[in-house]
Image (cartoon, rainbow, N blue to C red; front, side, top):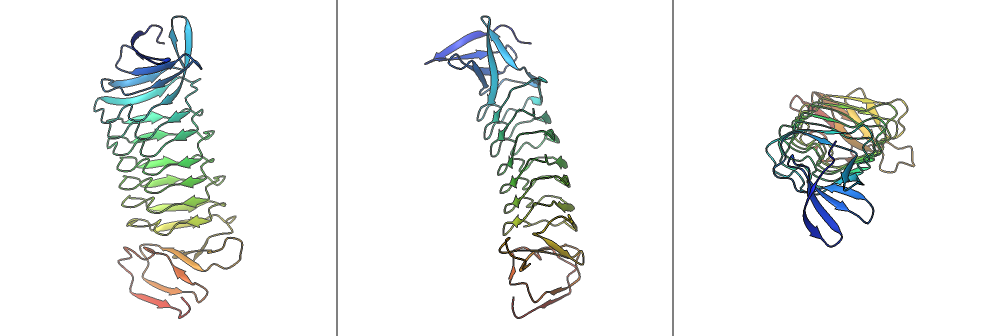
Length: 288
């Protein structure tokens, strides 16, 4: 536990402090909160306590600010106190850093875009099942080395390029997932091989499967009323979720060889048949 800090600078009503290990903090006496700020000299395994004790006054750590560890090539991991009250990890917080592992506290409500983008050493990120996070932000893990990721049940949306150019092979989605939307190019140039469609997933944005070369298996929850898999080969969705018509072709498994597009399909999304290198025969109804 860090108990003493030297004040380096005063900015209006806020104080800038250093923990003696290269991590810089901004202390706000107005609400007794603290934020981690740019820390270019932090290194190794970083421990973030629940609070800072400065002059017998406690400052609760709630935020990791934008660019806090950006391009830091010396950090390895970040560990938080069990009773952490961290709320927000801002955009680009660890961008292009050497971080290898981090476990997100359940108190966090938001990880902003590109927070771990270009973290090429990052292989492990754990978000607990009771996490309050509802969105996987755009480009969050882009160009990282994460091979496996477990989606917390409370996630409702995965935004653009979240796993683009990532080493991702396995995305674990629980049956009780609240996921309802996967945006465009989420898995672009990743190595994902299998995807489970949970009960509430109803929207696959155009281009969602772009450059998913290895995606050869999809399983749809029997409780899902918005997406349908035909012959374990093609995935169909609805242009209007309130209707019964499965009129959009969203995806074809990359190992497909022959396909007959049903007559009730009106639209084929872009990239649905991309990288289907074994595809020999396609029969498309005139209504498409």
